[in-house]
Length: 262
Image 1 (cartoon, rainbow, N blue to C red):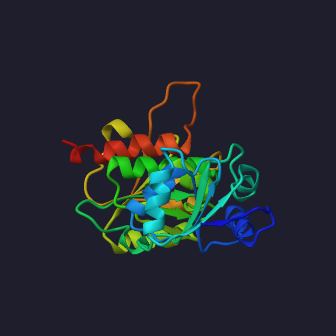
Image 2 (image 1 turned 90 degrees about the horizontal axis):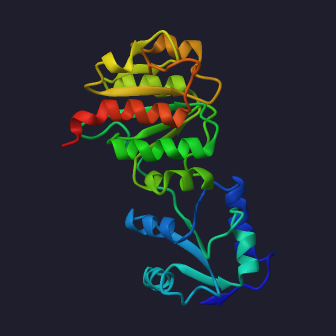
Image 3 (image 1 turned 45 degrees about the horizontal axis):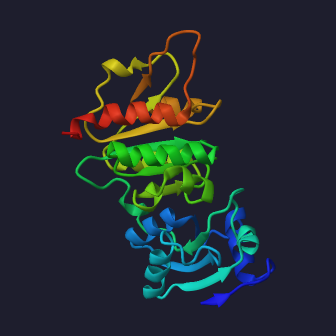
């Protein structure tokens, strides 16, 4: 295993570029759990850096051995150097770079097509939470559209707790493209709206569905609302007027997916 002693090392700089979003070729996996999830998902982990002080710990050593068997490029560095490669304030003791999943074409596949379309969900933590709840509720995939955070950015990956490595995810520049694609796959388009729509308690959410989820404070654009087959409103007691995008997604996805649970 090679040793890195400088924060100006080329590999450390590569990690920083991925964390900053200027290099989209790789996923930044911060911590042993995301690294293990990436391996289980069949992704190719290309590079890792482990803290010298932690490489022999009982919770880290088996992962390092597994990475070695997979012929991953392994390096060790003092914690102070590793901190320069990790964007997290309290950095993990191991970080890695992996190739992104190649499953975006399977968003509309599966025994039940259920696809949340996150429109302008700019907060990566919120987007990651939506990805996580989408997998938990049985969605077939997710589309991040418009000005949404990138689902493979490090903050969103941490928020999804690894779900983005398994759930088919697509990124499109224009939400209308996502709607057109959903219609091509015979989906009914349901838009969430804070008021004026059919109550979630009365909605029919069976069949192939694409669910439009608006971003924080902005909601859905008028043209997207007009493109929907139905508007859906979650009942709220006053004075509450709106819910967090991830909470909205969770409530609607579980209502749509509950028939698939035993």
